[in-house]
Image (cartoon, rainbow, N blue to C red; front, side, top):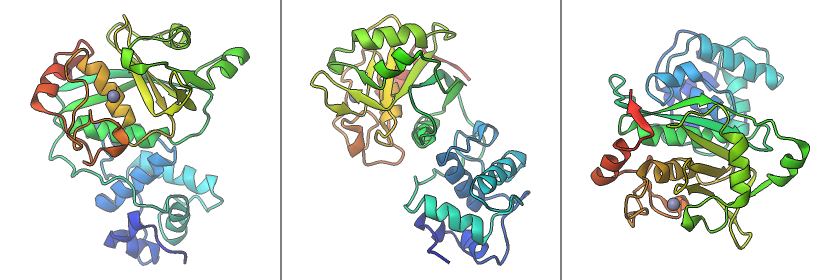
Length: 294
Ligand SMILES: [Zn+2]
């Protein structure tokens, strides 16, 4: 068979499954299942239930995982038996040939203390791998007991004109933390159904600054309702970083000089997986009006 992707090859259990020695199926639990869940999520097979407890895949091959494995198999011309063996792993390896994110160890029990309510709005995108950024952001905040509670998503009903207009979102000099006219008009539509203490995150095809250069994302915080925009192909930590700006509010310094910190800029150069937050940053974040008890 084609080589097993490095994201699977280091796991003994997955190697056995790929040789069809013993397939992975309903009822199995453990690290191999987590790696499969994470991979399916990255490919767009979202798993709400399996993420709910720990904010990272729970490693339980239950009915949700079974459903997603079958959907994946059906979508890729495989027989949908819901069992992960040679063929399913071969297809997954082909689609995800690189090392994936390193999953944090599963906590002994769920230990969330806080929650932040988010609404995802996707612009002009159809099937792009947003869940990779989402999984990373979840992991980052989960480390500190903060649960990212996604209340609604994903696509936005735009008119044909708006669709063209928001193909690329101009956020101007994001350093000012203010809404550009374009972001302002987008926000008017995007805020529908979003409560005062909840945050909207826009996923755009392109995000551009005042010089029309592509950037990863921006958080306009000095507005009555903050707006977060993230490019779909941004760095693994962009979503968490921009969300950090909103939660930190006017905390200074807004950016850290420590490359291990979530608030290091550019976020593409962050070295820790998942990134850290300092005690002071956490204090400010926990005091944010966007944070509520879990
Ligand atoms: Zn920043």
